[in-house]
Length: 294
Image (cartoon, rainbow, N blue to C red; front, side):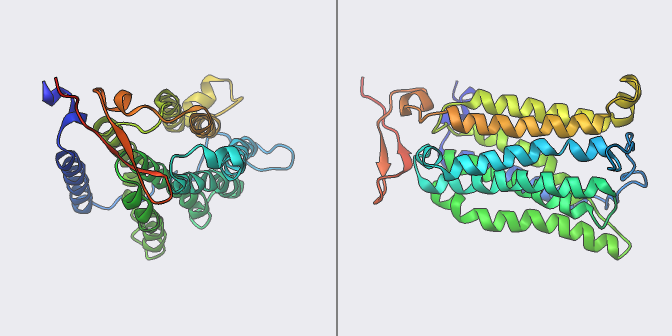
């Protein structure tokens, strides 16, 4: 049945479905009441000082972000990284992603030294850039290179605006965190829609699945910060584990890029296929599919 094979639906139908769901979600969000930060948002379970660092484990557990971010940027800028993309424009959102990971490590390190509203944006902004960049990267690889590439900057601006809006509204006495939370939790939904509705240009989806599983685990660790800290005999908290697990998730995205390869059109679409349409610089910009006649 065609309904069970969404990648076989007309392209406009698939794009319209994503657009309608996004519009509906944004509409519901705009009508929802404001969501201020809770009074205990900046209070974490593990506040121990070690090596002269306050909140030491929550601070030091950001190092994986920094290391993975640097590694990812160096690999992407190297000859192997540059040659790993069918089109050079596909590399841009991943450069933003790993830059965001790197600065998440720095920003979260700074924030956890003295958690407060004034320091929180340094943690949130780079994370937002990484979320947005990963969604754009998936769109570029599965839907349309040119449109996705051109949308990268506006999408990053929109993501950053969610953090700025929270900060400005908080300073005005009516802080609203809902737009940032929406961005954080709706991004994986859009990512799943793109993966489910459009065929891949590259192999390695299982690496992304591992990264997503680790991301979910990180959110669980974050939610049970104090309970985990108590259960583990006050040795390590859920928030510390969240940092480490989220850093590992970013690492598996790097592994995906390092190990994947372009897939044959026939494999991607699930039926006999034809060819890549080349642009003037010999980079594939679209996949054209033709069915064999009986």
